[in-house]
Image (cartoon, rainbow, N blue to C red; front, side, top):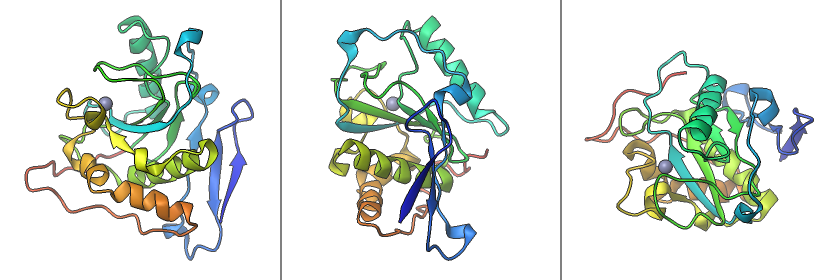
Length: 223
Ligand SMILES: [Zn+2]
């Protein structure tokens, strides 16, 4: 059973999950969501023409190698400034961003479609980004857990279908390697979908890292 506790009064979705009936703290999964107010988000006004209803779960990596010791909150604030100043987007292009330690940062308002450097239909797209570059770094177990728990929560609350989980490159074919080979395979072979479906059934699937790819990165992303 999952119980959600709101920790950010200003944000309806900011919450922490506490699992009951789990054997030990080491295996007890939890989801920590950092609200927009908590990281200091300053979104610009969204045009009403960009309103949408989220339907399709699309997953990204940042595509930028994560350096250990970086503050994820600062990373998100920098991305927002870059998005607004350089890309002329009103906000970060993602609805959620997941740090190497598994913390989930709330991004763009879910009621508005995202932005992209690539061309594909954005209406209905719910964008989740994992910080790091999984062409060059290995995804962390904490990110795999947080991705699964976040998507489970979104599927429950927004009535989304886990069958819609896809990588950016699946949506924008031939335009990007995003979300990077070390992570993309968890989407391609249905692993993330299976974990989410198990969570939705009330099971607690064993979320585990796959072995190193022969032609893939060897260094795990570090906090
Ligand atoms: Zn992407």
